[in-house]
Length: 230
Image 1 (cartoon, rainbow, N blue to C red):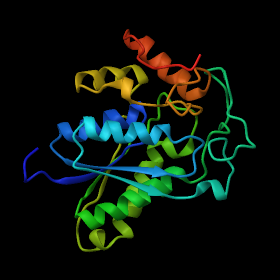
Image 2 (image 1 turned 120 degrees about the horizontal axis):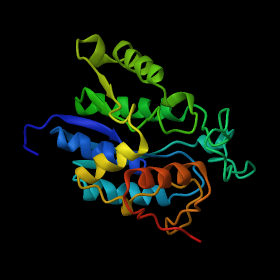
Image 3 (image 1 turned 90 degrees about the vertical axis):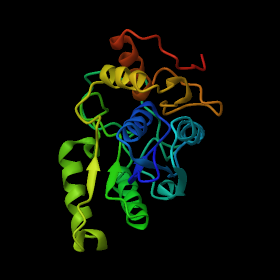
Image 4 (image 1 turned 180 degrees about the vertical axis):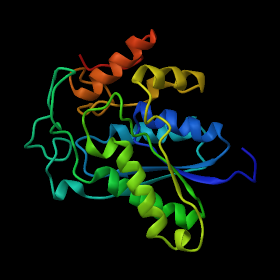
């Protein structure tokens, strides 16, 4: 990275997808400002992973913002009274209980605010519309709509800047993401994807995130570096 590198904000959750997105942003020459959000999720081991990933992949900065989505509930990831679905079949229909209302909208909004402060016109996120759990805010239509909002509702957009929301994994399978990450030197052992990870970041092996992650490594023909609790 040179002193002339353009800044970009990269949402980094600590999971495998966002780690690959951070590596892609760095490969494209951006000074990547990693942004994590503590939104009231059940565990914070993914945020520990986000800090590790940001350091390992050379982020120019790493910021964690606190938003209390647990106060409104409505998701198995923020409300202890709602169970995280386990061992769901891959073809299960409907939006699962792990959907967090407005989470991606809020995270991208925070990223948009930081981008304006930094003078950045590029925001990277790891949403994926192929191997995903049925979340409506992981669809291409959502990314397109938020990009239109970003250019409409900001000082930067009004003054002529073109703000781009980049989702480089949008149409990739989990196997493709694994392969791309390995190509870019991502150490997936540092990442945490599990919805029920313990304090040490060990995965449950039974939630949707664990299933998709394991299937991705298997389809890519790569040993799974995930640490499991059992």
